[in-house]
Image (cartoon, rainbow, N blue to C red; front, side):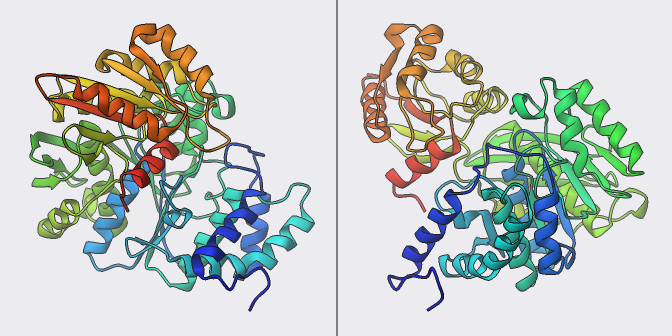
Length: 453
């Protein structure tokens, strides 16, 4: 048995590794430098350069877009590695092979394999490697060991200084840029976009969602500096048509060469998911070198099959009926506004009750204000992590926005959900629902309560 391993099985070993990782700097504590991750990659023999990559950043929509890119690549029989964050339920979700999270055994094995080298980096640096940096190193090593044909990599925060940014991706994807992590990335979308556009490498193709003007200017400036080609949503590609369908939506997407992919069913709700699909499709076209001056298009049947199999846990996910309970991981005003729009389009609730638990480092007032018009009442609560906003503080903010009569406080998430269901069931005419939101962690804990895997 190797040092640090347990004889109680893979789940116990995984918990032991999580405890070790938790002692490192958390994801919301940053020291902007690529020195540590570069040092680890040097010792490991540059595993991140042994496969091509598609790199994805932005404020919202990164994980959904990454999952769509992964599905598309899989439809064309490529072996994929996907690295996303944060996780909804298990840390193993962050590293996926062929569309599925790696096993607890493989996660532990990968960690133990690189652990001695991580310790070497720690010894040679003024600041030890962070939780996210170690996980990034694990992902890149796991993908090289598999080996994968292509890696789909989501940025953790920002871009330029993010630990993932040691790859040389030929395709960079930038989802819509909004205000989030302003204390670390900048107080305007233009400044935030400067950081995010740092993933655009020399000669790459940048696939860019519709952006605020200052963000677009920052991204185009970086593209010029890197001699990169830019594909802009609404110009070189985009969503041509979309209509609500049972269980999702039916869309027509235009790719890089002007080809229209018609009757594409996406089993996800909201206009923003259609735009994520357009980004994903264009990224894969760019990866394969079709469209644009190269001409051609992807096989339409494979594209349709890929999108029909897309899932995005915790993104307007229905986990119960009568009353309907929906989970959505919106954690900033931009995400909340997108969720509100999608709720109005896809669900005909006569009354909607919110269950909200947030992190303390977010624009919570902005999030609550975005949800206020659609929530008849709100039950504020707290998830189990140290980053959670204390329930009393959240309640005070909620009362300011909703008024005291519309706010109920339940310190435990399970009690909060039960209280919200009771409030929803008071709707005599039926058609009431419950929305659990505010944080990816909140949604992950709710999924476990509802027995979702």
